Image 1 (tube, rainbow, N blue to C red):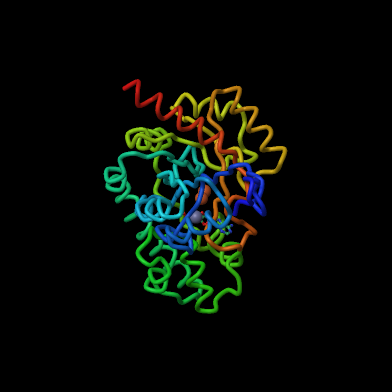
Image 2: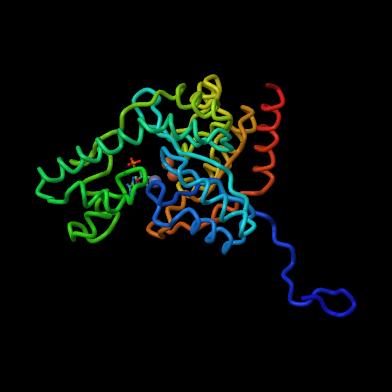
Length: 291
Ligand code: AMP
Ligand code: ZN
Ligand code: FE
Ligand code: FE
């Protein structure tokens, strides 16, 4: 509302524009639909988000539609699980352009997730936890199946009291019902993202992130690194920002929100500056012009 004479009354001072470039929806293991994720972003006054579901871009179109309606920009993204040596590493593909092609390439990975979930269910059954694959698929509602769906099925049937407990006792790495994923080599994952016109960004590298490791990833074509993530300490974020600068990696960041507040997460909580997204846009535009 504008007062006579042009002075604004009651209008908040222009808030700094924040973005959130790591969010999940029901297209994978999030609990909110793509449109609801965008609505939550709008509620948090974010200027832009990236929808980065595990191994699928199926939610992107609906999120972009909602974004157009609500005035929130939605960057097309994905989160892939790749391997480096023998550790699973997550990789974000941001600013994807060729979505249909990407979705087709990811189909084999989504099929693998179903087979893996069947093996997890089998292990659980051997441990006396009698949930069924149908219970898990009911939680996944047609989205890319993951361990969180197994955890929710276990909760729904009273096998664990809390989501965390399912991971701590059964599903986490090294626990008795843990089953790893089929391995996608890092170089292939990066290449898949580049072919789709996107930027490859190392997700939540955390403490394990030494300079040498980042250098070897840069040699494979990595474009950026997720500096801001809820799993990083303030010290880690400073160190990662400095390393990104040094190695010419684009900084990125996000809440890794799954639509629940199990781990105290909220849209926009990492206060990622719009300027980081602008730098990513420039890199994408530069690359497309160079073709
Ligand atoms: P998946 O892709 O099936 O291996 O599942 C990975 C997802 O499980 C992550 O994105 C988290 O949402 C969740 N997750 C992994 N580890 C844990 C944990 N220890 N506690 C709670 N959630 C976890
Ligand atoms: Zn997840
Ligand atoms: Fe991740
Ligand atoms: Fe994630």
